[in-house]
Amino acid sequence: QLLESGGGLVQPGGSLRLSCSVSGFNFNDYSMSWVRQSPGEGLEWVSGISENGNSIYYVDSVKGRFTISRDNSKSTLYLQMDSLRVEDTAIYYCVKDRWQQLADFDYWGQGTLVTVSS
Amino acid sequence: IVLTQSPGTLSLSPGEKATLSCRASQSVSSGFLAWYQKKSGQAPRLLVYGTSTRATGIPDRFSGSGSGTDFTLTITRLEPEDFAVYFCQQYTDLPTFGPGTKVDIK
Image (cartoon, rainbow over all chains, first blue to last red; front, top):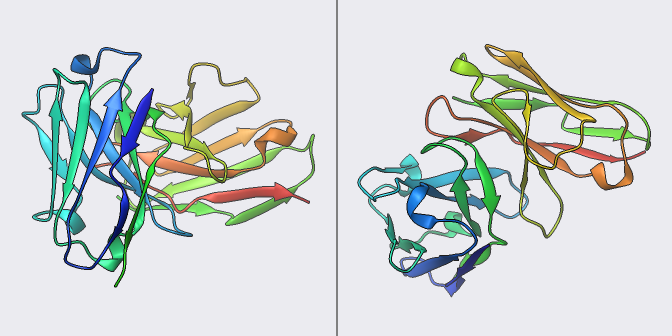
């Protein structure tokens, strides 16, 4: 089970921190990612992190603004989102990489809604 | 890698066959292409990975095929629960998704 939290309404330029609490599999053994879906739009991979946190990637549109991290002792994935823009409005999903980092995704949380609006 | 999907909407009846296309802007190496099903208000579900391998618990009416830049998801006999939006995703490079094909009831 992947349970996201931390979404909400924020003004442009503001910050939010998303969390994803994981249970049901050994969190330490898998790389993880965040994927988002804007209203009426398709899916967009946002960021990924390796099992030990040493390998991190971002989509260009969030580089320098978002920071992914993980706490393996708490089986929790994070996404710190700063300098938020209207176009960051989306449902954010926490996802498990099926077999290697930046591959396909076999488990998804239910998502948390982030709304950036003045 | 940019993915395009066609058609945008496919209107079919239960029991019919659905053929969904996904085309990549450059070759998807090692067949690193996956398909997902998404229903409104639900998280996406992995259907197929590695072009043609069904994920755990996925019925055999779903099948994937293709290579290079052209890939296909086929649903042989549509069940009522199959009406949804389908996305393809490549993972040769940083992951990207196609815009989706909506399969709706005719």
